[in-house]
Length: 262
Ligand SMILES: O=C[C@H](O)COP(=O)(O)O
Image (cartoon, rainbow, N blue to C red; front, side, top):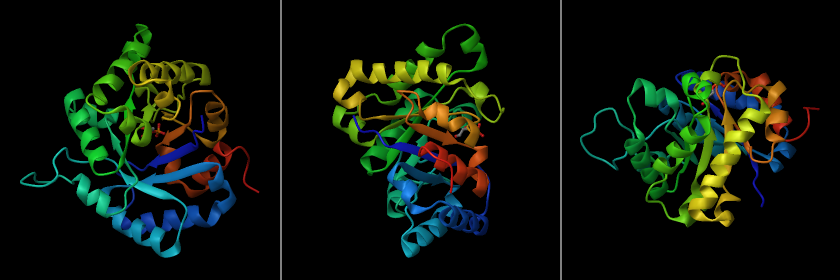
C-alpha cells in the first residue's frame, strides 16, 4: 500500500487568468521542491485559467499539477457551453472534479450524469476526483455512511477494477462542512473514508481499494490538515477557500507533507 498524499485546491469560480498566474507563481516560489516527494499538489481553476497555468507549469517545469472543475459527458458536438474530456486532456489536465455537491445542487446533476462524466474522464486519461457527501439532515439521521457509499457505487458503475485502481480519486465532502468553517473531526471523516474504501474493496477487491486515494474536503485549513491526513484512510484534501491564498495553501501542503515550512 503506497498511497501518496494529494492536496487539490478547488478554486471554484474565483480568479481570472492573470490572478491564476500570480497565485501559481507564488505557490511555486513558496513551496520548496522537497515537499513534492511527500505530497502531490494540484490546482483546479476555472476553465478560463487552464491554458495560462499549463504554459507556466510546462515552461518553468513546475512540480504541481492541475485539473478542471467539470467536464461534459460528450466528446464533441452541439452542446453549447460545455467543455469536453478531449479538450481537457489536450490542455494536460491530470484531474477533473466530478459530482461536487455544488454541481449536484445548482445544476441538478444526478448519479447517472455523474457516472457518465466519470467514464468520460477515464476514457480520456484524466483522473476523476469523485465527490460524495451528505447533507446535515442525512448526517443527523445517521445515514451518512450509507449515503456516501451509495453515491460512490453509482458514480463508478461500469468501470473495470483496473480503471478504478489506476485513475480514480475519491473525495468525501460532507455538505455541512463546505465553506462553513466547520471541519469534520478526524474521527468523523475517517469513519466515512474507511467505509468508502471498504465499499471499493467489496466491489473491486482489496488490491484495488488499497491503491485508491480517498480525500477529505470541507473547511480544511493548514491547522487541521495534519490530523486529517494522519488518519489511516484519509489520503489528502480537496481544499476550497484555503487554496485561494498562497501563504495558507503552501503552509497547508507543507503540513500535509508532514512538516511546517522552513
Ligand atoms: O471542493 C472543495 C470543497 O467544496 C471544500 O471547500 P472549502 O474548503 O471552502 O470548505
